[in-house]
Amino acid sequence: MASKRLNLSVQYAHAPDRLPARVHVRAWARAALDVDGPRGGQITVRFVDEGEGRALNRDYRHKDYATNVLSFPYASEPVVCGDLVVCAPVVEREAAEQGKSPLAHYAHLIVHGLLHLQGYDHQSGEDDARRMENHERVILAGLGYADPYLTQ
Image (cartoon, rainbow, N blue to C red):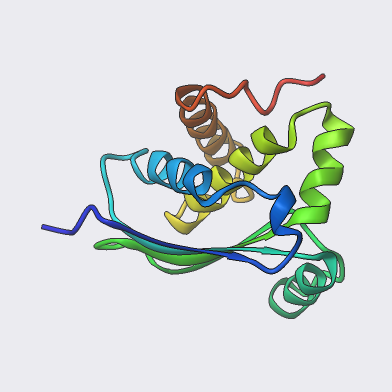
Protein backbone atom coordinates (compact mmCIF):
# COMPACT_ATOMS: atom_id res chain seq x y z
CA MET A 1 0.00 0.00 0.00
CA ALA A 2 1.36 3.43 -0.97
CA SER A 3 1.97 6.04 1.67
CA LYS A 4 -0.60 8.81 1.93
CA ARG A 5 1.96 11.11 3.46
CA LEU A 6 2.61 14.46 1.81
CA ASN A 7 6.22 15.60 1.83
CA LEU A 8 5.96 19.23 0.78
CA SER A 9 8.74 21.73 0.23
CA VAL A 10 7.75 25.34 -0.37
CA GLN A 11 10.44 27.65 -1.69
CA TYR A 12 10.05 31.42 -1.74
CA ALA A 13 12.45 32.82 -4.32
CA HIS A 14 10.29 35.93 -4.80
CA ALA A 15 8.60 38.40 -2.41
CA PRO A 16 7.75 36.00 0.44
CA ASP A 17 5.70 38.60 2.35
CA ARG A 18 3.08 38.72 -0.44
CA LEU A 19 2.84 35.00 -1.15
CA PRO A 20 0.60 32.31 0.32
CA ALA A 21 1.77 30.81 3.57
CA ARG A 22 3.01 27.24 3.61
CA VAL A 23 -0.13 26.19 5.52
CA HIS A 24 -2.28 27.34 2.56
CA VAL A 25 -0.08 25.56 0.02
CA ARG A 26 -0.26 22.37 2.07
CA ALA A 27 -4.08 22.50 2.26
CA TRP A 28 -4.37 23.08 -1.50
CA ALA A 29 -1.90 20.28 -2.28
CA ARG A 30 -3.63 17.82 0.04
CA ALA A 31 -7.03 18.59 -1.53
CA ALA A 32 -5.67 18.16 -5.07
CA LEU A 33 -3.95 14.89 -4.18
CA ASP A 34 -7.23 13.54 -2.81
CA VAL A 35 -9.09 14.01 -6.13
CA ASP A 36 -9.00 10.31 -7.06
CA GLY A 37 -8.76 9.01 -3.51
CA PRO A 38 -6.19 9.88 -0.85
CA ARG A 39 -2.66 9.83 -2.25
CA GLY A 40 0.71 10.70 -0.94
CA GLY A 41 3.22 12.92 -2.61
CA GLN A 42 6.67 14.35 -2.69
CA ILE A 43 6.07 17.85 -4.01
CA THR A 44 8.12 21.03 -4.26
CA VAL A 45 6.34 24.33 -4.90
CA ARG A 46 8.69 27.18 -5.83
CA PHE A 47 7.49 30.77 -6.12
CA VAL A 48 9.67 32.68 -8.58
CA ASP A 49 10.04 36.07 -10.25
CA GLU A 50 9.45 36.71 -13.96
CA GLY A 51 13.06 36.19 -14.94
CA GLU A 52 13.26 32.68 -13.51
CA GLY A 53 9.76 31.83 -14.74
CA ARG A 54 10.60 32.97 -18.26
CA ALA A 55 13.91 31.08 -18.32
CA LEU A 56 12.27 27.84 -17.19
CA ASN A 57 9.39 28.18 -19.66
CA ARG A 58 11.87 28.91 -22.45
CA ASP A 59 14.21 26.06 -21.55
CA TYR A 60 11.57 23.38 -20.94
CA ARG A 61 8.61 24.39 -23.10
CA HIS A 62 10.41 26.50 -25.74
CA LYS A 63 8.11 29.44 -25.04
CA ASP A 64 9.93 32.69 -24.35
CA TYR A 65 7.66 34.27 -21.74
CA ALA A 66 6.84 33.80 -18.08
CA THR A 67 3.71 31.72 -17.50
CA ASN A 68 1.65 31.37 -14.31
CA VAL A 69 2.53 27.78 -13.34
CA LEU A 70 4.84 25.10 -14.67
CA SER A 71 4.51 21.44 -13.70
CA PHE A 72 7.43 19.04 -13.72
CA PRO A 73 6.11 15.51 -13.04
CA TYR A 74 8.57 12.78 -12.06
CA ALA A 75 6.20 9.97 -11.04
CA SER A 76 2.51 9.51 -10.36
CA GLU A 77 2.57 6.03 -8.87
CA PRO A 78 2.66 4.87 -6.16
CA VAL A 79 2.84 8.48 -4.98
CA VAL A 80 2.88 11.76 -6.88
CA CYS A 81 6.37 13.20 -7.25
CA GLY A 82 7.05 16.49 -8.96
CA ASP A 83 7.78 20.18 -8.86
CA LEU A 84 5.55 23.18 -9.42
CA VAL A 85 7.01 26.56 -10.32
CA VAL A 86 4.63 29.46 -9.72
CA CYS A 87 5.53 32.84 -11.23
CA ALA A 88 4.29 35.30 -8.62
CA PRO A 89 4.20 38.47 -10.78
CA VAL A 90 2.16 36.68 -13.47
CA VAL A 91 -0.28 35.29 -10.90
CA GLU A 92 -0.70 38.69 -9.24
CA ARG A 93 -1.27 40.39 -12.61
CA GLU A 94 -3.79 37.77 -13.74
CA ALA A 95 -5.67 37.96 -10.43
CA ALA A 96 -6.03 41.74 -10.82
CA GLU A 97 -7.09 41.43 -14.47
CA GLN A 98 -9.67 38.74 -13.61
CA GLY A 99 -11.03 40.52 -10.53
CA LYS A 100 -9.99 37.68 -8.21
CA SER A 101 -8.15 37.73 -4.94
CA PRO A 102 -4.51 36.73 -5.34
CA LEU A 103 -4.98 33.99 -2.74
CA ALA A 104 -7.86 32.44 -4.72
CA HIS A 105 -5.82 32.57 -7.92
CA TYR A 106 -2.78 30.99 -6.23
CA ALA A 107 -5.08 28.23 -4.90
CA HIS A 108 -6.45 27.58 -8.38
CA LEU A 109 -3.04 27.44 -10.04
CA ILE A 110 -1.51 25.15 -7.43
CA VAL A 111 -4.50 22.80 -7.69
CA HIS A 112 -4.22 23.01 -11.50
CA GLY A 113 -0.50 22.25 -11.41
CA LEU A 114 -0.98 19.34 -9.02
CA LEU A 115 -3.57 17.82 -11.32
CA HIS A 116 -0.98 18.02 -14.11
CA LEU A 117 1.47 16.17 -11.85
CA GLN A 118 -1.16 13.42 -11.59
CA GLY A 119 -1.47 13.09 -15.35
CA TYR A 120 -4.42 15.38 -16.07
CA ASP A 121 -4.08 17.32 -19.31
CA HIS A 122 -6.32 20.09 -20.61
CA GLN A 123 -4.54 20.43 -23.95
CA SER A 124 -5.19 16.94 -25.34
CA GLY A 125 -8.88 17.47 -26.10
CA GLU A 126 -12.13 19.04 -24.96
CA ASP A 127 -13.21 16.03 -22.89
CA ASP A 128 -9.91 15.98 -20.98
CA ALA A 129 -10.06 19.75 -20.47
CA ARG A 130 -13.64 19.53 -19.18
CA ARG A 131 -12.72 16.68 -16.81
CA MET A 132 -9.75 18.60 -15.42
CA GLU A 133 -11.72 21.83 -15.02
CA ASN A 134 -14.54 19.98 -13.24
CA HIS A 135 -12.04 18.50 -10.79
CA GLU A 136 -10.62 21.97 -10.19
CA ARG A 137 -14.08 23.38 -9.50
CA VAL A 138 -14.91 20.62 -7.01
CA ILE A 139 -11.57 20.85 -5.20
CA LEU A 140 -11.68 24.64 -4.97
CA ALA A 141 -15.32 24.66 -3.82
CA GLY A 142 -14.33 22.23 -1.07
CA LEU A 143 -11.67 24.73 -0.03
CA GLY A 144 -14.19 27.60 -0.02
CA TYR A 145 -13.20 29.24 -3.31
CA ALA A 146 -15.48 30.31 -6.15
CA ASP A 147 -15.48 28.68 -9.58
CA PRO A 148 -12.25 29.93 -11.18
CA TYR A 149 -13.75 29.69 -14.66
CA LEU A 150 -16.67 32.06 -14.09
CA THR A 151 -16.13 35.28 -15.99
CA GLN A 152 -16.16 38.45 -13.96
